[in-house]
Amino acid sequence: MDVDGGGSTSGVDTAGVVAQSVRVLSRRQKALYQFTQQNLPACKPILTPAWVVEIVDRYDTDCVPETHKNNKVSYIQDESIVKNCTRILKVRKDMKAPIYIYYQLDNYYQNHRRYVKSRSDRQLLDGLNYKDTSSCQPEENSNGQPIVPCGLVAWSLFNDTYTFYHQSKELEINRKNIAWKSDREHKFGKDVYPFNFQNGTLIGGGTLNPTVPLSDQEDLIVWMRTAALPSFRKLYGRIEQDLDADDLIIVRLVNNYNTYSFGGKKKLVLSTSSWLGGKNDFLGFAYIAVGSCCIFICIVFLLLHVKTPRPYGDTTYLSWNRKSNAS
Image 1 (cartoon, rainbow, N blue to C red):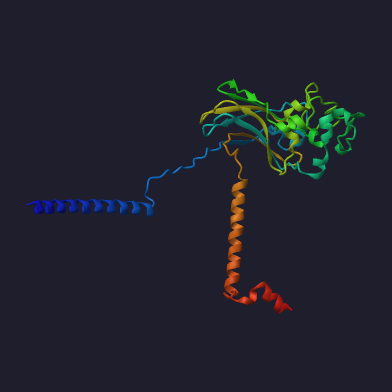
Image 2 (image 1 turned 180 degrees about the vertical axis):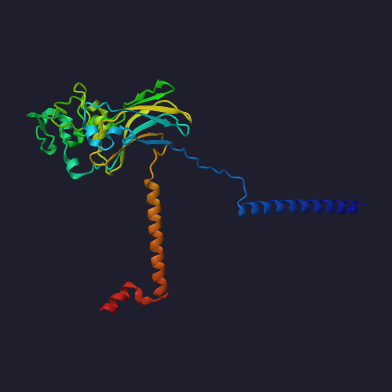
């Protein structure tokens, strides 16, 4: 009886071990299957970059009265004509503060050699203490006195102004810290004030407050950092308030700057930014261009290989064999 009892107990234990082994094996097979099929639970971060919202409005044509459409240059040069203009901008998507205000100029070559050289960086830092301003020609002197800041770059300072209204209230525009900190602190003198500026017979652009040092004239500092391309944007200020979709923004601007003489364009831009910065299509176009060139080169080499294939294992292509054959 003991033997039979012991034998039956052993049989039960064996069956349990076998069943457990089958369960373990099935779990391993299931885990292996999930692993090979990439079905195991895992963290899958999804990149959801913030959208950059932009409002672009070209106003240089629409802000010219109908009576002056045929002669825009005479209109913009006539100081007796009030050049106020009103634009209405509609917000298409929610725009979170800060909202950056830019003015954009097209067909404006700030990279022209004569234009770029017509300035004096030493004078911007030292003022009237620096006398050698021959590089500023033709805007070096006026009425027999030196000009501070001298040169064509400063002389052509952008001078359109913008005022924004939302729900019948004027939006506050933050115009501080729009220039690079390094420019404010190291390139424009804190004790240098505008002198004899825009006092000639031909006025180029905006004027400067003679009681404010150049280091605090941030419009000038932004303008003096010349652009490399004929289409560029420069920061005008920031709106420190959120704007909702379908909001209407009324812009009252003064159309002072002359872009009509050379066929230029003026645009007002409101833009948000993400952690990658503002909207810029250059990187995308660069990737497409480089990728297309790589594909083209690959196709060329493939066709060359098909036409004149190189035999595998041919030792005549080794460098030392080529030297011996040449000799």
